Image (cartoon, rainbow, N blue to C red; front, side, top):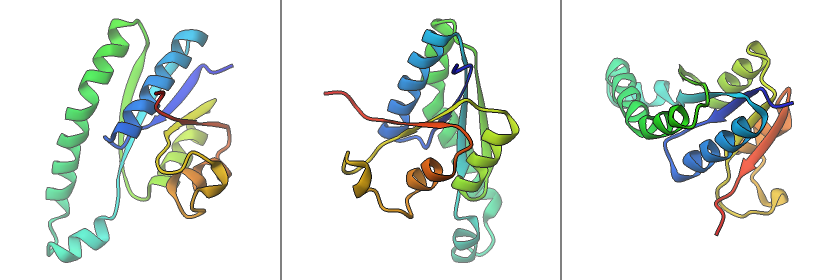
Length: 144
């Protein structure tokens, strides 16, 4: 049912929670996790920084590698296959393209802000993914 799990990981607490939910699903269904991070807003940033796109990509790549490392190690310890992917562009488009190309069964995203679905801003990354995804979408919330 959920053999291919895309975890949208942005390096935040919400992204870590999404990973933990994705890990639980993978363990339950014998699935594999695709941890996907997207470097966004390069055009705006490169204009402000006068063409330092390579520096932005390098910095963001190091950030994602650092923040993902403990999660990838945990999945490995728990016997779950996980691969990480870093993309450059618009998060919504890149994640949806990846999900379609890889025949993803479920996308797990981190929830932020109000927990009531209807309060989500329709322009938010999560709402756009949830409304356009070619598969099921789970919004991970931190359990208290």
